[in-house]
Image (cartoon, rainbow, N blue to C red; front, side, top):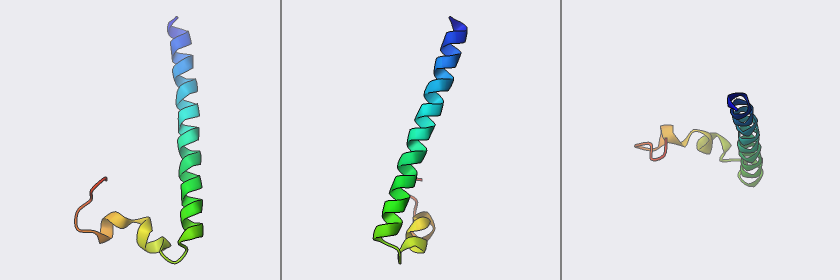
Length: 55
């Protein structure tokens, strides 16, 4: 049973990371397509603003 739990954990982790990376890539493509001029400003917003709110 322990081996099955380890395999299911690894499988879920791989799927979860793949989904998250795919969503992040999709959002980056959409953002760069919608706002191509603001790419450098919004790529690292926590440096421009006073205090990091989410980071």
